[in-house]
Length: 448
Image (tube, rainbow, N blue to C red):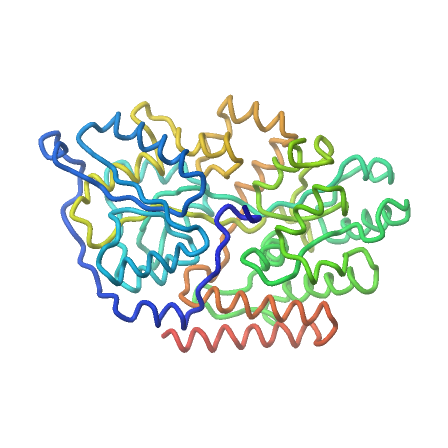
């Protein structure tokens, strides 16, 4: 499994448009409301998702069918790496399932293609939304309408080896970039690591996540609500962050240059083997870091608030995966029941699906009430979480500001390449970010 539970080969905007050229605009179906028992006896729902731990999905569906005896769910796990391509083929063939997983990076394009229908106004949705973390709830919407319930929500995290900091005499975990620089220099001075910060910059699905997180944690912005770039001049946070990265690698020599040849999964494995002192990664890497089955430094890894230019109490980048409904479904009410169960509450009013995913695999839960769940609290304590830190980061995380655009992935990959060129000292930070901003404007214009 890669660093993110559903890492995949992302589609470029042009490739997406080519593959979806035959897609029609689906009509909204049916009235709102749950099924009557008489209708429920006849209903079958087709459900699909990428094949991450499908046996757990099967268990959840068995519970759903036990609670809803009039509904039969036919589940199809699809190849994780090719999920988007396979779903697009199903949409184009008119054989798509009734409900399915959607990545936040695909939501806008799939809505614009007419493949999804909004769920605004469906029973108990408003009540559910009140319990969802803000960044996760935001990811369920596109152009003012809601299209899903949350499968999971997670954040990018910054972690470090507490034992190494103790040996170097560093008492407080860094929460600003200056503090991170000073802590890394102390670790370097103590001879504990030549390059204390280990981070991957090889192009991959998570490759821009640290950059986003440092900007957002600093209270900065990359885009305004109109999806126009505000970097590098109107908002200089991104420029400050990128200059810090260059200095960390070349001037202070605390950021490992090997990272230019590594992706996040490779860095994760290197860090768990004992290399580096500081790193960042997807949220479910933290419990893995303190699990002796996977990590040689289990018990020593701690999380800090994501380092920012200034400590303004903000959080890192958050993202979400959701359950959505086909615009063509003929089982709308049953599909909604399934979406509400998987992305909400069971018959007892418990968030059992989200709890299950978290306790089994560390997959981030999207619901605020689970912060006080006794089983989750016990698990977090065992795995070395500090509740005040993880709860503050989750509550203040933000989504990538242009994530819902049809051109996000193409811009993301281009910007990763610009950052790589900066770290190799081929171009300057201002030149790289100017090119990235111009690329965003070009893609926005092409998509309009």
